[in-house]
Every structure is written in structure tokens, then in C-alpha cells.
Image 1 (cartoon, rainbow, N blue to C red):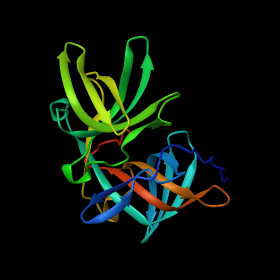
Image 2: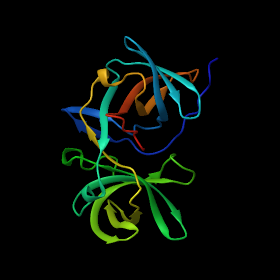
Image 3: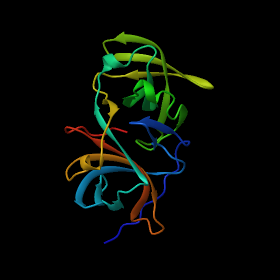
Length: 205
């Protein structure tokens, strides 16, 4: 049974450079898919989404791929460019996940804008201006063009970074985050970006 999927409109156009390739990470008006690779038949890939839907894609020149590997709270330090999905609660802005960008990817998706990881969540991609350590983790002051935001990163917050990957890393059982353009019937993704977890990593974005 085919399941229609809804286009989620979050975030500006942004690009990263990985292995000398321009990779659309959060392209204009993408569909965000989070799930597991169910099967691979040549270039044809089937994804089982976290909410139980079946999504297909064909890996070709319209797709870019990057690996996701673990990082740590010690990597989140002054002067580093990070991205963090976060939500506001009674104690302030709380990180849901953190991506530590390699230096060559500095500036990716810079800003603070709506995200769909959790209800009312935001994505903040910015430079770490200051860090304050406490028993609750690390409180970071993030500065981006036009604004500033303070986010608390708990010790249990998933923290990752990007690494090289190829279509050979897109194999059954691996976890993926995909930002792609949906087909007219909403059952296929036609082009975009695949973040594939390496060595058992789940892309937390």
C-alpha cells in the first residue's frame, strides 16, 4: 500500500562542502525523512520511516551522501560552528541534538528557524561564542548573523559530526536522515541529501 507523505516546509537553502561536493543539507522546502533502510536493489532504495511509512528513492547524480559519526560534548567549544535542534521549556532552550560541523562546513544553514524534530522545535546553526560547564551539562552561547541564542546541552544529548560516505554505505539496517524533494504522488523522493549513520550511529537530526 502506498502512503502519501506531507511536504514539510522548514528552513532556508543551505549547502555543505564534503569531499569537494556541494551537498544540499536543508534545501528549500524539503521533505524530512527519518528511518531505516529496508532494502537496496542496485540504485533503488526503500526506506521504512520511523512512523511506519514506506518511502522509495533511486540513488543517482541528484543525490548527495554524507556519513554521520559520533562526537562528544568536549568537541562543542568556543569558536566551533555547530547546529542544534532545540526546544524552549521553563528552564530555557534545551538541545535535542547537536551536529559539530567540520571547519570546512562552517556557515552551513546559519541562522535560527523552525524545525520538525519535535513540536515547536527550532534549528540553530551558529558559532559557539561561550561555553559554561555545570553538572547539568554545558550551556553554550550561539551567535549567528542577526541574532544570538543560549542553549543547554545535557550530557545525554546526542552529538555527532559529518564524515565521508558513499552509496555503498546506504545498506539495509542503517539509520538515515533524508532531506529530499517528493514525487507528485508523495511516495518517492526524487533528489536531495542522505545522512547515513555509520557504525551503528543514528542521525539525530
